[in-house]
Length: 137
Image (cartoon, rainbow, N blue to C red; front, side):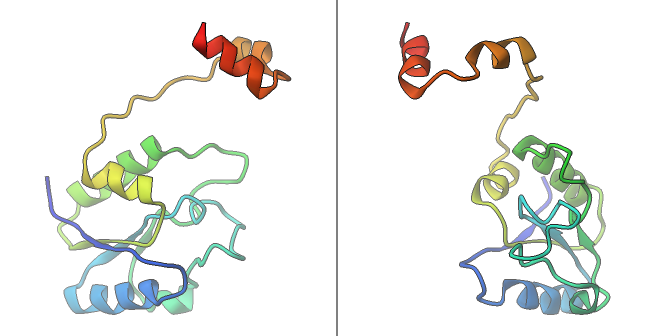
């Protein structure tokens, strides 16, 4: 497994700016580790970097889905690992969702599970107590 640089921390501490400067020094690229930045149009409140802020540094996994599409930790893990494993350049995962970052770094074994519309219909409208009883039984 190839190594990757990871920059994480609290909101609004300068992670993106630091990652961009580091990527320029290393001739690297940045992978957004955020579960919201993948969605087109969700710019406000997501901390999504602008084209100008990217300063020519390639960024990945930003604006790749519409809000009508589903995006999971398994999707992130597969896409991030593919980017890391198939790049000759240093890759930097910047910011993001803790579980997403851990899934990539620790190699979680994740299997896609298809939706079960029939089960969803059966469970819809049940309260917490009813759902808990179903699990306990």
